[in-house]
Image 1 (cartoon, rainbow, N blue to C red):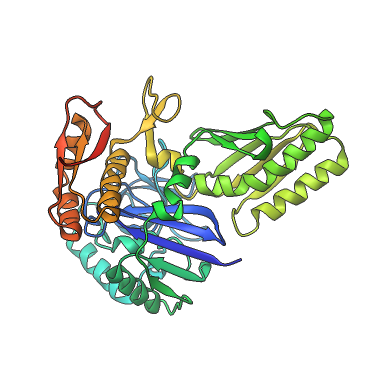
Image 2: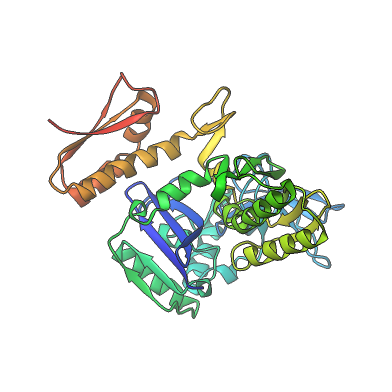
Length: 410
C-alpha cells in the first residue's frame, strides 16, 4: 500500500505524519526551521561529543556524559575494548532518554551522516573539551526523517520549498531517490492530522459498535484493555469474538500512532474456542504488517496477549505531557507540557491567518502561556514574515495560565 510522508514546516514546530493509503500510522516532531540550534532533549540521530564517566565490566558497557540530565548508556561489542574513564567519544543517540533512563548510544555514527557532515562533526569534536551536541544545526525537516529510510516512502509532500530542496540534497548524499518530493500548500488540520494526534493522546480509542480500547502507559510497559462497552446484544461468546476481531484490526495502527514500545499486554475478551483464538492471532498478524514492528508472545485461553516492541523513542504521551498532581487537561496525573501547549497556540493563530486572509486577529493567552511565547520572539517574527503585521499576541489575565483564544480584532 502506498506510503506518504507529509512534512508541515510551521512557525513554531516542524511535524511529520506518515500515511499508509488514507490511514495515518505515525507522527514525528522536530524544532521549527531556524530553531534547530536551541536546547532540546537528545533525540534519535543526534551526534554528541561525550565523556566516559564510568565503565562497567560486568555489563561490558560505559556510561557517557553527553550533557543531559542522565548519562547515556553505551554497550560495547564483545571483543572490543572498553573505553577508559574520562576519555572523549563521538557517539550517536540510538534511543532518547526515557523516564529516568538516559539515552542509548552507539559509536557507529558515520553511517548516519553525509561525508561533508562527517568532516564538520570531527572538526567540532577536536575543538571541544566538554560534552556537547555536534550536529545541532541539522535542518528541522531532516530531523523528522533522520531515523527512517527514504525507501520507506513512495512520496514525500512538504509545504516549504526550501526544506524540500534540502531533503533532495540530503537524499542524494546517501544515494537515495524517493519516487517523488512535492511542495504543496497544506496544513495538518486540512489533512485530519491534528485530530488524529489529539485522538492518539486520549486514553480511549472507540471501535465501531460501541466497543473500545483503553490504554494505560507506564515507563516500563503499556497495558491495553479491550472493553465490549455497548457492542450489542447476542450470545456473549459471539459478541466477544466479534469485538476481539475489531480490536485486533485497530490495535497496531493505534499503537503506532501512540509510538508505544517495550512490553505491551493486551487483555482481549475471552475467545469462544480454539478456532476463535486462531482467527484472532491471524487478524493480529495481518494488522501489524507494515505498521508496527514487534515480537509476538502468546495468546492465553482467556484472551491475554503479550508482545514486545522496540523502545526507540519517546511515546506520544511522554512527548506531549508531564506528570502533574490533580491535572485535568489530558488524563489523571498528567497535563500537556507548556511547550506543547504553546506550539499548539501558535499553530491555531497560524491556521486562522492562513485561512482568513483579510482578518486582523489577536491571540489572547494566559499568563504562563504568554510569558513562554514572549520568550520565543522568532515565532512572532516568522508569522509576520508569512502573513504581515495583521495580528497581535497579548496576555489576558482573565484566562487560565495555559489557556488561549484567537479573536478577530475590532
